Image (cartoon, rainbow, N blue to C red; front, side, top):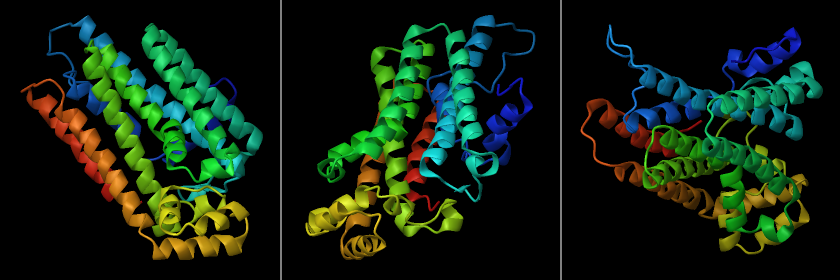
Length: 321
């Protein structure tokens, strides 16, 4: 789907996909499993000799949601790397380092435009609205991170709202879109949304933990990346609750290496890492509960996909990279 008339733009847009740097196709995996969990088997074609145009068209539409989601996600990575002046992405040179900021921004814009064209072809206004809202949330979350006041930076509610916008909105609204396209009830669509929302929050909370506990080789980015960029995440917020004096350290600015060292010292004495893991586990449990609340269905493929979605929640909170 990533085809451009200008070779340089095509090369830039395909860069992360070809290098496998955009991740482990986590979002498309969740979305396609969600389709199967709602009794639409994307991978199983109609029996030989049977032409089911409705089923074939539906599978194509659901696959399109997975592709749209991944293109939007990769576009956000390209833009984020420019904003963060990043040199690497999962162990290789970032596109902005390799080809420059301008082409990186344009490649991200191109991916968004391709996602929009595919989205429009679905001819479902509610799904278009959901995905457009997720894109709006990506921008809002990034802006919240860049322009937060001292008081907002100390707020767990503000942090979780920003995290939902930046990480969880896209996957939650994509899961809800799958439910709508398969003709599910509003209740089931909301359960699909809740699964994606809580899975996304759990994923980011563990990411925030790994920024302190992981290594640059496993994370594909420098350890302590967030705090060195002045970004306050859940482990530090929890540490502030135990050691209020940490607030003044953060307020003085984490662009100062001495303040970063002090913040890490307080974090080490606190239960910030443990409490963040516990919060991630809570959201993972809420995601699992949403799947368990789906209407009963004894189909083997449906049951297998539902088990896989629940297993994903365990993998998210136990991952080390």
